[in-house]
Image 1 (tube, rainbow, N blue to C red):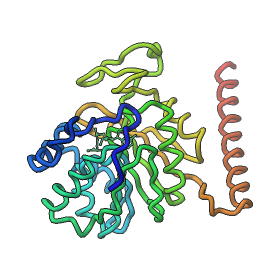
Image 2: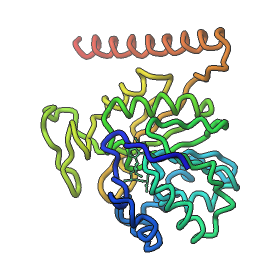
Image 3: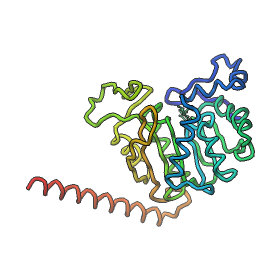
Image 4: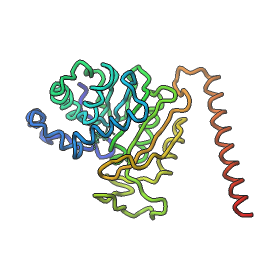
Length: 274
Ligand SMILES: C[S@@+](CC[C@H](N)C(=O)[O-])C[C@H]1O[C@@H](n2cnc3c(N)ncnc32)[C@H](O)[C@@H]1O
């Protein structure tokens, strides 16, 4: 397994034990579950049900970004065909907890080979297969905006065309003064520190400036602590293998679409003034 990298975005959560002496004991006692948030079973099931309702089938391929110790991964890997679940995380000890504790406990070792789980602090997710779906549950809440952009860039190279990436975040209303903390369901969030909040427009901009994503706000999806959902759909094949002609055509189509929406917005404004 690759060495632990001091992560980005505050490297949430820290290693299970800073001395590194008791990690295996802590994993054996299941203490890692408390490090990824509350409601282990409920939050895992919620993500699985959400993805199935959006079209995930057993033959889909899924990337779990910030997979932790597989809170959702255990439920989803039990549903997908063997080898179709992949996960990345910055925290090596959580990936270890998944491999030595959670997968054997659920009898799912054969469905998630160790090569499908990767420790990375740069969202490297080039596993060699195009992903139909990806999810980042409670990950953007710990990341500064430029790390979110890096995540969206890396994923744009790993998703299948039309692939959909769902990401949860704490929302700040658009009129919130930039420096204010925002009271969420159970905690306060910050513009510049973990736990972060974002405006919808921030997360739209983050995606549109790095790759050809279509962005759709889903909002409430039943998260117990009030995180809302954004959907990113990969519009064109931004893979290095795509021919220059294809990429130019796709870029031109994107620019035409943007020009059409700008014209529509302008005429709506003109009509409203009359
Ligand atoms: C609140 S936990 C959620 C874990 C999982 N998505 C779930 O629902 O159980 C946040 C996860 O994001 C991971 N994380 C934080 N920063 C990351 C980064 N830069 N790259 C990858 N994972 C990251 C943490 O290590 C942690 O496992």
